[in-house]
Amino acid sequence: MHELGLLSGVVSATESSIPSGKNRRVLRIALRVGARSGAIPEALEGAWPIASSGSACDGAELLIDFIPASVWCPQCDGEVEIDEFFALCCPVCGTPTADLRSGREFEIAWVDIEDPKDEEP
Image (cartoon, rainbow, N blue to C red; front, side, top):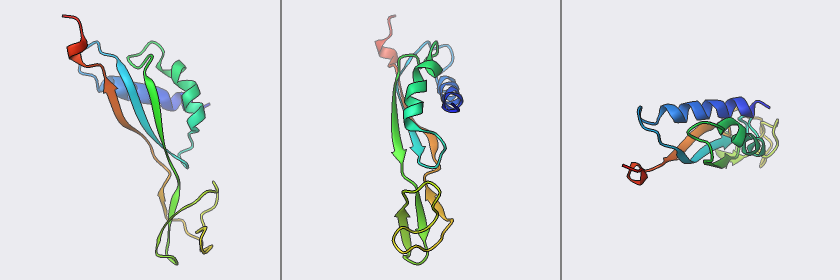
C-alpha cells in the first residue's frame, strides 16, 4: 500500500509547517486527491491512523476532496469529465485526446492547527 508512504510525506510536510518551538497538534487536514493520482481515498483513510501515529497529526481528522479526471476535447471545444480510468477519449463524441486537465492532484489543501490561545500558559 503506497498510500502509507504518501501520507508519511503529508505528515512530514505538515509538521514542518508548524512554527519551531511550538508544541501544537493538528486538528484537521484536507487533501485534494485526483482520480488519476494513483491514490485510493479509502486506502488513505485506512492508513491515516498508522501514518499519523505519534506525530503532531495524531488524532487529526483527515478530509479528502476527490477530484474527478477531465480532458480537453478539441472536437467539442470544452473540458469533459472522464469516468474510465484508462480512457483518454471524449465521452461525448469519442475523439481521442491526451490533454488531461484534472485528476492528477495529490496535495494538501489546508491544515487546521491548534490555536495557541487554547494552550495553557
